[in-house]
Figure 1 (spheres, helix red, strand yellow):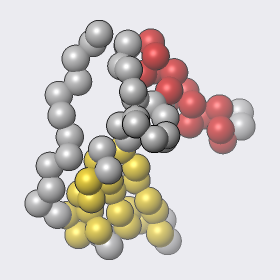
Figure 2: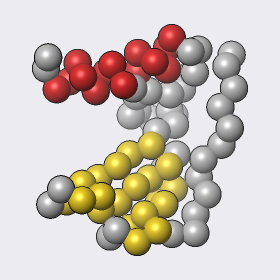
Figure 3: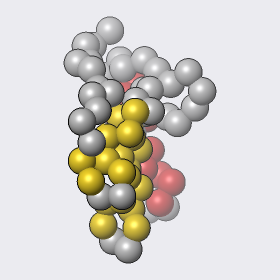
Amino acid sequence: MKFEKAIQKITSIPAQKFGLRDRGEIAEGKFADIVLYKNGAISDVFVNGVPAVRFGKLLNARGGMVLRRT
């Protein structure tokens, strides 16, 4: 399986299946959680664009929200 298809299967396809609008894609106006890896370890995490982990250190940020099916 191609890498792109694998990512789609764990992001946009489940978002569509569960009716989560504005989720599952990285695009302007969408909500996204992004994990960056460096040397095999988590370096940075962004939750809805809010930094939650920087340089491997947990921050006191709360960018998430409860998701409800629409």
